[in-house]
Length: 141
Length: 141
Length: 141
Length: 141
Image (cartoon, rainbow over all chains, first blue to last red; front, side, top):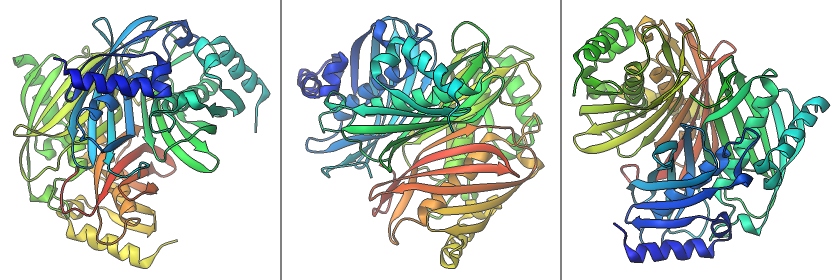
């Protein structure tokens, strides 16, 4: 169930970030601790074998997890990715992709999240990430 | 020490892959089991905080490791990424980035590789990856 | 829902393995693709801070995932762990621990699994693992 | 080159920890940011296939990385493992094992380390870990 305030906040963040807005993804749904993103793999995302490059799927997972963590940290605090793991379960081909990100736990200093990258009901990749939550203006360490 | 035949093979692969050629990276050096890539982070790769997005660094690490594995598998065999882990050691800013990928071991079915993502002598991220090596035409499983 | 044949097979394997039998864990439930283990953390598993050592939790996760993969591969095939990732979500203290392992996908060459390590309803750790499935008598590569 | 004060501190910690002392490992060498451990795999550490269980190798890697981080954090601060990744490069058999742990970076809140698990000059496993560094008395998050 979407929370309109959270949705608007995430969409504003994506619009304000050069990388995110250029990547072409949309926030389809969001509530505290979870997000659903939509994205479309085009010919420019395919490798020599005609499959979506793994780095693109890692990016989608990281974005979904980061946004999910964003919904769970208090205003005025920052989070940065400190670790990202992706398991590539099935090859991904051109077309619509859905990414579900959700928080496992966000504490006072560390957050954990996971993501599913899907094409229809086929699980393409699973991601898990670790996030540093901080009040400091910079950095991961 | 570069091996010209390997360098040419990797450059031809990058030129032939829509994703790799669009991503704008160059193979600076390569020998059996290791590669060195050059890439430039522009404004379009920055997130809201003005830092290079983590997904981009993950992509660079995956590309470098995949190419390093490529130099170590026999002709006619394929490799696909099955797992990718990235540790984000320091924030990355706009400018030149270098990526060193090298093979830990490539066996008859499984390969392991690692990558360093650097800005000058600052280590930004370390990646490690697992690859499935196969003679089959498709898939990761 | 338990499958008695699978349960018996896993219990026989644990009894026959010096490491598993010495570690003191029990297979509480199992069906194709998933297992539930019970284990008890004693004073000998605690570190200087009085918490269960992370290596012990990693071991529990690996065992649960390996057994889950075992239930999903065909007879006569072997699987070995090639990669293991653990996220430590909360500190673990002395007492009863439950471990749930389940398969994400087992293909002809590669398998993926995940595990939850729990104390009551508190999630202590999440594990994910990659497995090489083979007919060969030896090795991981 | 060993630092005697660091060596003594680490050995005292291991002696004071029920888990570490029971596990039977020795600190062979240590300096700021790196440690070398010795351990012996006995018959009780073998799985059904006669190989050292992966959880044991993960434990060794985690211990070596944790001790390496210990040498690099200031007195009065604590570190806990928040994430651990292991790649199993070759099967491990009974006998002497050496574990090298070293710090990649320890910042004010987050630390990164890596470990090599070796049998002679054969690399058995590579570990990488993320650590939360804190002044608080408890927990990982």
